[in-house]
Image 1 (tube, rainbow, N blue to C red):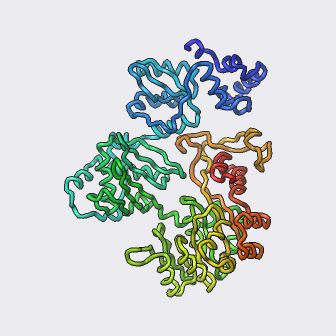
Image 2: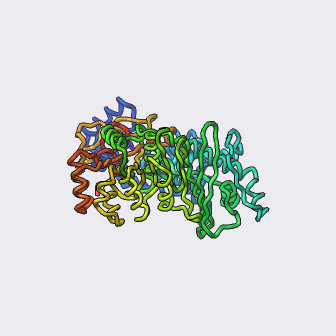
Length: 565
C-alpha cells in the first residue's frame, strides 16, 4: 500500500478509469491557475464528485472510509497532535491500538502529513479517509478556538466577567453537595460554559450524564454541537451548581424540575430557563438562553421578503383580527410575535400578553406568565384580559378549544389578537382551528393573516464563496442552469461549518374572499394553499430558494429545511 500511496491522485484516477488524459490535463491546468488541490478542482469542474474520488481512493489503496460526525474521540488522542499539524494537514487521530495510530485524513496521499504525525507520536500511522465537511466539523468540535476544558484547567475562568443577577438558593439540606458546588473548578467551569455560549450565540446548553462520561452540547444556529467536557466525576457538582443557580432543590433528583436565573456579561443581560430530567445515568439539564435584547428586533429584521412584509404591515393597520404565527418548535414563532408587538406598540394602545413563559420583556406592555397552580391558564387569563380594556392581546400559544374560542371571539369584537400554533404550514393552521371545534364561518371572519415559518442557517460572511452547482442539483428547481450560488468554505468565525446566524423563511396567507369561501366550505388545506399561491402567496420553499439566489443561504440548507412533501 505504501507504494500505491506514493502515487499521485491523477494517476490513481486514470488507473481506475475515472478520468481520461484530456480531462486530467484540463484539471491540472486549472489547478496551476488557482493553486487548489486537484480533488477540489475536479469537483468544481464537475468531472468527479468528492464521494467518487473518496470511493476510488478507498478501493484502489485499500484505505477505509470513516465517519466522524457520530464518533466520540478521546481528548487524550486529540492532544497527541499539535495545533499547527492539524491546521496545515487537516488530520485528526481517531483510534489507538498498541503502537498503531489511526489517522483520519481528507488527503490520504499526503505522505508529509503521515510522516510528520508518525515522527511526533512515535507510532505507526494508519490513514483513513474522511470527507472535508466532516473533517471541518470535527476540527471545530475538538480544536476550535480554545476548548472550554482547556480554559478551565489553564486559567480557571480568568477574564470571564459574569454577574449573577438573581441567585435563589434552596435551603442547605445537603451541606456537602453545596460545598462541592462552590469549589472553584466547578464554579469557573460553569461560568466558562455560560460565557462561551453567549459568545457563540447558543440558544440552549445541554449537560447530561452518559454511561462512562459526561457530555456538554450547545445548540448553535439550530444544530447541537458537542464541546469537550471534564471527567464524569465532576458531573454531580456541576449539575448541582446549575440547580442552585436556578433555585432548584438539589436533593430532589428523581423528578423533573424547572428553574430560572439571569446573568449579565458586559452590557448583555440574558435570562436562563433551566429544566432537569432524570435519566438512567443521572439528571440531564437543559438551559435555554434568552437574550433580552432580541426583543428589540423589528419586522424588517425577520427576513420577510418585501411583498410579505408589506402584506403583514397592511394587516396590522386593521382595527381588529386574529394573526397567527405557525411552525414547529424552534421555528422562530415567538421572535415573530415579539417583532409584531414592537411594531404596533404605542402609548395609545393597551397591549396585554399571557405567555408560557414570558421570554422577553417589552417596555409599555402588560405581560403575564401562566401559573396553573394558581389557576391562571391561557383560557382563564384570556378571559381576565378581556376585562382589562385591551386593544391588542397576545396569547403565547393556542393549545385547546377553549383558548381558541375566546381568541376568535376576541378578534371578532374589536381586538387584534396575536398567537402561535403548531402546524406545518399557514393553510394547515386555518383548518386546525376548524378541527379544534371552531365554526368555519367564525374562523373565516376572525383570521386576518397566518404566517408560516422556519429558520434556516445563513452563509458565513467571512468565508462565503461562489460556485456553480451541477445540473443534477438544480433538477426540478426554479433556478437557472447558469446560476452562481454561494456557500461557506468554513473558517474559525463559523467554527468551520460554513454557516453563521439564522434567518426566517416565511409564507404569509392573507384571508381574502376566495380563502374565506374555502374555509367556510371546509376545503382541505391543500386546496386552500393552492388558491393562496394562485392569488400571490409565496410558499416557504420558494422563499427559501429566493434566499439561495440572493446568496443568503445554501441550496442544501434550503432544501433540508423546506422539503417538498
